[in-house]
Image (cartoon, rainbow over all chains, first blue to last red; front, top):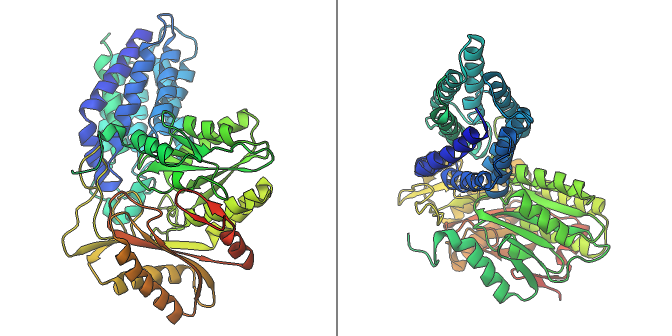
Length: 210
Length: 331
């Protein structure tokens, strides 16, 4: 995968977030303050614009780093720093390479998870985006260890994230605004886990087989 | 949704333009969403910067001025400001004596202000951060994000602002801010939800005979939903929750009965009458009362009661001159 592929991912993620903004906002209204879709739409829109303004010789790492910086600058809320940090860490992990192989993308995904956990201090089961990211990373790593190619690894990660998001429904939130609700947060999907699954699905969509 | 706006996307910047037009004592940058005192930075004075999501007006921009904040950052409605805004405000008011960041305890605010504080240190600006978490409705445990910052934010900004105006150093101003927060508690009740302009839908549904106890200030649902009660019952529920957490007997109190945005002043005074009677009956003496909509949640109906156990020094700082759009006395 090259820089153009990662830029296509950011653009497609912005498109999916925009199309799904209302759904994300509805999820957030149930357990938070109902603005997750709006904020992410603004943030990823800015990321797509910033990535589009990069010169043609930008590396894959630079593309992802730039998207992260735009998200920190434009999103606000907890999602801005968390998604921004995830992408910036992933971008840094990609380094100066011009072509991203399956192992490098896996390392970048793991770095994103580490950054999110460092900043947000959420553990598995707290009902946050981490509950989508952890299964995504482990599914990716499992597929990679089994000799899968990049496209299959990414698809495994996207499926893992979707399952992880689904599994947040019965959980009681222990982080973020939803935690104020205590047991009333049960029975609702975590909006951050849902958007994480969406963004990884965007990556799977733009990753070409073989 | 019927609102006095031009377009949902423009609410925050349009309101900031209005603030600028109405208050020449402020310097408003609508593009970056920052508001500062016209006379900032003042050499040798500790700068006070706060901010948060919009929709809580007059908090925070309405408290920018002599004896209170030097700058405020306005995020999108109910969304914390971004680090770029916070660092811009910090640099604009830094007079060489450091800057105190007053942050309400919400995950988004904490994360964005933390990133901004790191950027400020890169610029060699000494910053201290005080986190306001006065809301007793949230159990402070490892199972929540911790108590929310609500009505006591006003107390912290006023008292720390007075001390900074007197020329105290950053350590002393930060310590006073933390002391006020530790001595303050709040509890809020909603009689109706509110509608974020960009979403157009009420943040939760309440039946005609229901109220929401233990709300925050972002239209989020509260601790429990009960049958709506009288003003006396609402105030009793609020002050009982506060008293159970921080006994008020024997204390000299600063008391705020705060309208949430959609409750008329006449009802806020009905609530204040009940609060004054309740506190007297429980052995507390109210030495400084304040009634009005100061920390709001758009057009939500309901009220929040905030109390601070004063000391003679805190009372003196509360009484010190203040001149801001929303709070002014002694000058």
